[in-house]
Length: 366
Image (tube, rainbow, N blue to C red):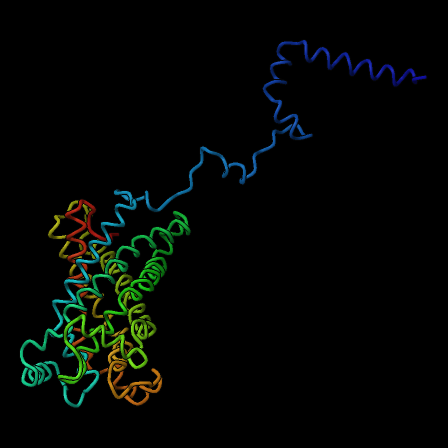
């Protein structure tokens, strides 16, 4: 038998529930707040968790590729790769005479003590055409390198920016430039390595001891693989030379461009003519190139020494010790500063000229 008091309480609660359903205002209020009354025992509505909000179809994650005036689609990256081919392949092939002299100064500094005297010695002993030795493997190798260097830099810069988020991508953009350029150069050097090894062997071998044509030189490199370590025997020295070089090249270029547009050309970038923007590109590239030459010179010397016949079978540490630390840092440095400064300035100018012609604008800004 139910206690009379309990019975009365049940009756009152039941009548109140029934009246709340029948009353039109209370009924509307109840229906309008079904989610909150079911989801929480308290009077205040429960807020959705961040994970629910993030997972909703209406909220989109910030993507660096679409934060630019021109979206960085796959077509954009492909065009950047073409620009990289033109920029690196043509410029490196054009300075082959400087490269031939520089490599011989590094390998045999006693015979080739300076740029002009080295050029005169090469022409006197081998003829005028000798200063263009290795031009074809240079053109092919550095075209492949440029494809990955510039194309993948643009890709990795966007990739790391998206990972960092909109705010952090601006706050830490210097680190993003460094990470993007290092990642791109890692792959670029793998593409470059076979032709770089052929080029160095052609340029530094004594006259008559190595074929000068591309196909015969590759064939002989393959036949003497145990000695030449072809095709990827120089990839580690290349990484040690090119990755710091490229990190400096892209970081200082972006930084110098930013300084120009912040403190010298202070109007909006779009207000300046294409020629002015490309002039800023060249100046920034040249300054960056000087820094690059100094940073990467010891490793560049080591790559040249690896191609020398008497260094066959020797490790990089042994070769470096025998050549001397001072020589490793200084021999051929002056020539390389002139060569790399001009080269880097021209590379950026060609690259940005191509981008401008494609309607993609020039690189960098405030």
